[in-house]
Image (tube, rainbow, N blue to C red):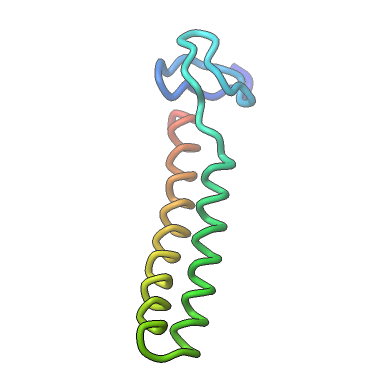
Length: 92
């Protein structure tokens, strides 16, 4: 089997790595662009939250800390989701 084949997320049959729909079961394969968007949004929220938390007082500072925590969770969670999907598609 060539290296450019991965496994379907639904039926686990080998499919081409660039296929967006499985030819066997018609299941839509996950797009890595969604994971990238989540990570970018997380980094932006983290950076903006850090600025708010450091440069403001009162409720704005609380909002900054909240954005900091949510941004960190989105960035790390999006990246680990991407890594898990890639490992699952490679059937390791």
